[in-house]
Image (tube, rainbow over all chains, first blue to last red; front, top):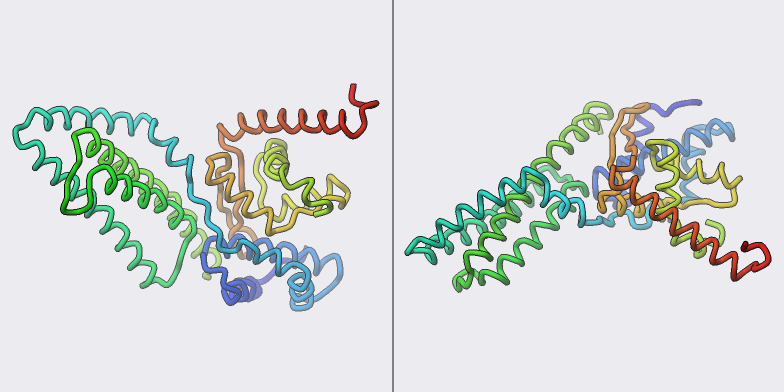
Length: 208
Length: 111
């Protein structure tokens, strides 16, 4: 079967980009889908690239672009990591740490500091990600969907420990939020490492 | 998709069943395989397929592998360990559903 050239692949990618497929990784998947269909059309119907592409898009554009920017948050894949052995160790360490904090006379001051550190960590994390997206002008569904959990932790923290100035947290609520935040950081790091491997192959192989 | 409403609820189970048999597949391959098995009767549209794949991925049922193929990167889907167990449950549910439908639509052949 005739295979598309790099230029033709870039043409499809550019077309999808112009059609508002905003996430780089979703676009790569759709590019492969369209390219596979076009290659088959060229072979079966003996068409050149542009005729095959045009014909395919006339019939399938609506379906290809339907739900193009829908992102499903990884609801269970993060939740499942919470009882992995490394997170159980983190949990036990946090329980030990907070046990000693509970014995301390300045318990509330220490808890408040931890609360503010976690809150600042979440805000800095979200800001850095936003800045990277603006600077690189690239958005990846794979990464953005992971940060869904950061938002959840942010709200759990606010509801259980108070809104900025008014601290109302306890040893348990601050401990739980700290555990969730560390578990999230581990999950995000693992996701980034996996994503980097994908992205490296995506960039080096296609130059898109 | 022919009679799409009838197939809609079974799309993820169809995908999972195909992945049990083929180990790993990419999006276009799934659409072509379904077309081939059903002799063109069932056509899974891209607008239904990719959200279903992404949802299964987000649920931890599917894992992905990226590979360079012919000047582009291809995303392969495969079942995770929990996805394999889930496939057995969903296939059992689907079979039960088919049996029940058979009993209603054509009671003579339901036993």
